[in-house]
Length: 449
Image (cartoon, rainbow, N blue to C red):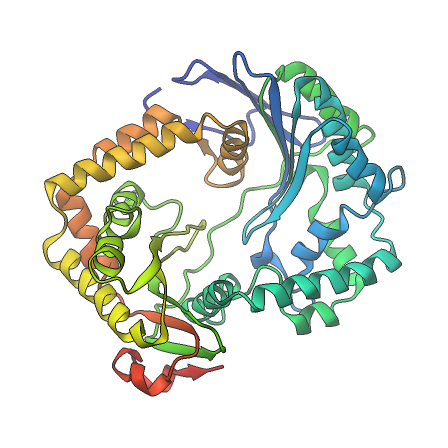
């Protein structure tokens, strides 16, 4: 397979052989539900996921935090199963089940033995389609979510991340915290969450994926049973790219916390999911802060001992992306760490990377991609993201070929764009703001919290 496989919504059935010898099949059911499976020879377990193409960025005023709220509430029971029934279903067979809310999707997933796939499909399907959002459970879970938000607020790294995104995407849905804020969770009403549920959890907006020991036809029959009685419908259109967020304005957010270590995130906008430069970004990220041999790890930790943790990251969304560096260090080392980050940004934008770094980064990325597919969860996730994202399946050989074609020049060109953009910085901990004056950026954009 040399090119990505398109997944057109108007095509009811698609199947193809991957480079690893697995078979991927996709069917669009009469209800509009899309089902994708990857049958892995010799597997004895299966990962199952119910995907809904709605995330925190899709919430309207009065609904902020509703998507994550629903993730919790769907475990609280249906007309047929109590919360205990749901938990017992998986515990009794040694299975795993959980959920995740992101900015552009929500996924409810499980991993079970092949014999227990019918149970997993039925139970998670009941959760997704039959949640009652019982008022008492709603109020109880509100308290649980407030505790979760409080726990995140006590984590300097989490707090720095939220502050970074708020500064990088001001007045944009991607800048809002996935879980909402304490104020929005206290204010949101059950009716608002229920409206969000009814609007987005219709069959035509749902994708069901499975990878491992799975027979596509039998799996489709199980899913069809979940949605029995649903009206015929076409799948929802995929997310339409929105106007990109405004360019970053330089800013420094300092959040005082009595911590032993300061959490720092410094970065800017990155690349979106559709950007053809993403393979080059993978290489740039690996060289800059993607491992123990990366420039930042070597400079900050190994050679100067200024931090225990330092790394770079590059999340991508359909129409936007971010790129940044995280470090955790003592208060007295913050300014020095920021200087090193800026210095490495400048060096890479000036001279790019060496041939040895390019070869090492390619080996790191290609190895990680290959090893990740030893996990059925990763294969199941790849199916869901392929369907809900750009609407194409990228095989391992295609991904490896894209990485292999990255050159030093392509990394340099990207670095000259990406690493010269205005930066935003979030700092959380016991640090004196005045000591960071040279890193503040534009004074009018400075914020304290």
